[in-house]
Length: 299
Ligand code: CA
Ligand code: ZN
Image (cartoon, rainbow, N blue to C red; front, side, top):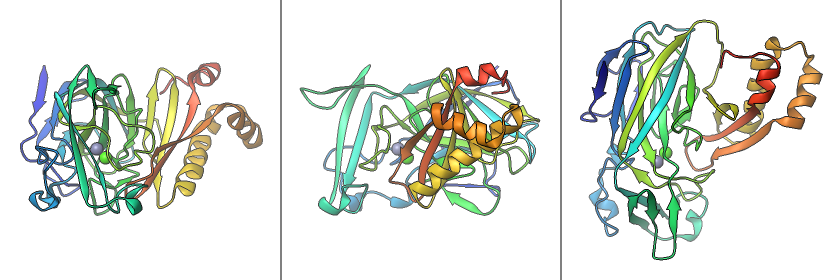
């Protein structure tokens, strides 16, 4: 059985107070349709700032209530497939991203997508389909979909792609999951403030895990696992992603804290996800061969 969630009425904040658009069971195939981060309001390179309703930015489709997801448990989201539309939009401008102090106004560039992204006559960009906004209801209050945090949200992490599994701490019954803001491609950092923004659909299935304790979203793929942490500064995010990963791994090994730290210093990678959103996101990556050596198969 497949459940299709149409993009109709998106959410603009993750919150326990949102009304679920669907209830799904673990293991069920769920296809989630999404708008692009501008809710498809950018229709040409000449689209003006004033013609856009800025209250409708970063829409996510959801929330989806997952049966069996309880506070204290962990929600696993398996991203089985991502399909994107045939037209993307890039953007940057004044006070946006890392170059905003030297740019004037707001610029858009619409690009055709057919297997590759046709940037101009010389440049075709290989697709790296990924999901920018993905998360669950946060512990407290409402967090707008443009801001990342412990609940996920706008993590803009290139690894969130087909074949990856994301793990979220569950804060509320049903988890109240949502996603949106797909990119046909994005570089680590997302330095100009956008990827190649695109609408599409994600095919996922959920799993609820009892005995996996994480404080932040974690990602697993063939290469290994990444702890994804968002903070006010990139320094804090990077250091915290290391510490959260070490605290996650330590009880699953026979190593001392100093031994594990030495090992992680030798084989782990501190990486940048994005440096342009209201909170900045870093991740700490640990290769799968380490997990195999310690028979850490839970992830
Ligand atoms: Ca984003
Ligand atoms: Zn985006």
